[in-house]
Image (tube, rainbow, N blue to C red; front, side):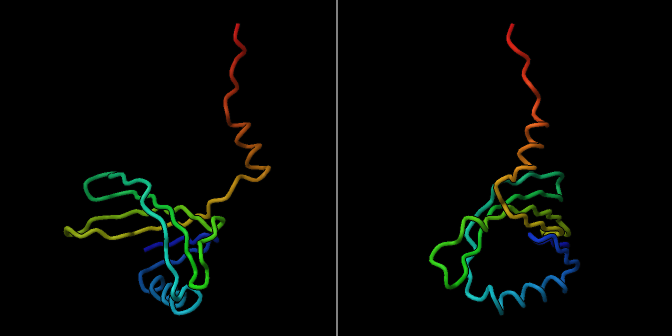
Length: 116
């Protein structure tokens, strides 16, 4: 399993992922709740699926999960011997575009020709 976290760190392998997440659940994420759900599921073949989810973690001392910590996740699942396994997972923080991103979006948007 490959896991790319919201900060860009990359954890590879089932054991490394289990250890890293166990440390989080034993520490800062102890008692936390994940709120969110599936946005899309697309089968790329009979044994490969692409899943997009969105979620936010509410820490045990918070009444509501902060909107600024919402993330979108991309997961790749593969089926082996009739069982589905997650093989890759990327978690990206959702944030409003900054000035540079807004400029790039404007430059990438095709200009409409003036009506004649």
